[in-house]
Image 1 (cartoon, rainbow, N blue to C red):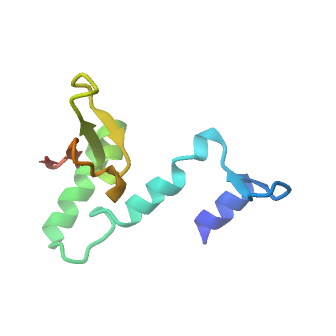
Image 2 (cartoon, one colour; image 1 turned 45 degrees about the vertical axis):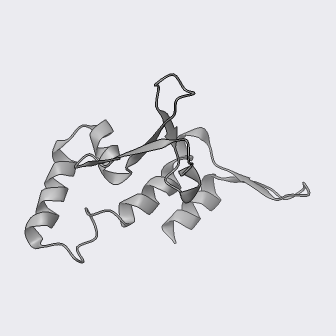
Length: 114
């Protein structure tokens, strides 16, 4: 409810056009995505974690820098291909990122998956 009220307060809805469009200001564009991942992260979800693991994840979030804390909350998925000259491209955490000519690397701060 708070996310909807925040978006309705600061968002801009264009109802006059044929396709209804909703825009958030530049500084709020990643907020819904971060809230989604925060609510599902191991920092807040205690189900299937021991109390020690819960404390570990919460302390790690508190002690790390802002960049690392964002990585803990929302993992980063990088795509490597032979066409991009070895430079990784960030891709969304979605099934559409899986392509046959790409190598995906998931960085969750605590582990890296290839």
